[in-house]
Length: 288
Image (cartoon, rainbow, N blue to C red; front, side):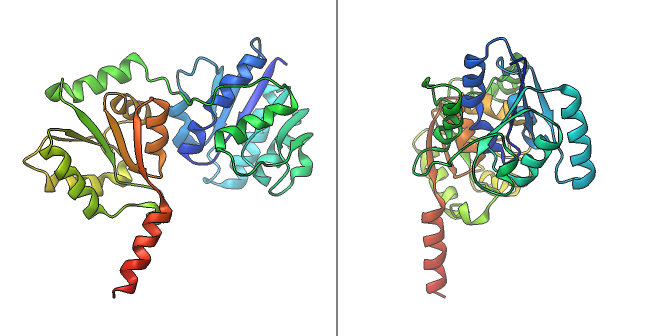
């Protein structure tokens, strides 16, 4: 194997969850050049990863047909020996087939799985990282670490140090109140109450999120104007956010990308999951 492609074009959290797979493939094929194919929003996450040769960006939602044609042409030119796709997408399977990659490994599910040359049943009841690593059972019986990982650069760390210079030495907790899915979000009022309680106990609060999460983070910041709150929502890229999270005692968040950022930086996580939030929403409806 000279060139290997790993494909995951889903959400940010899903891309972080393939980092153990990337590392495992490099362990199996240390001499191979390994590339990853992700959506543009997630490409930054894999920057500086020592196990990767390059990160390819696939803007699948912008002019989908044209983007697909360009991607097929690019992959064909790179002459990969094998592609591994934990993303069970018919479009992904078709792209790998039309790019003429001779070994195409993935799960036997979704649409067009017959376009894969090696496929394995999709396991149930185990963590998604284990599912991703189970793909390698067709290639090796070796056991691999499940720890996710990200690699902020020295520049990323420097940016964060500058943003946090006024609170150096303080005990920090990260709060990330946003999520792509509204049904996964713990109520904002609860986050405000929690943040107030934590600041009263001497913690500084670091608000984490993208541009779309800034309105929520701004509300929390306004409610805690007399307390130690640093709002980084919309100000930092993904690796800078990861670097900031690494300086916190813990992350408190919804089931979102922030959870996976914290895990990858080995910061303790307290997460609110959608089952509770959905129950709270249904309960509130019953009171109307």
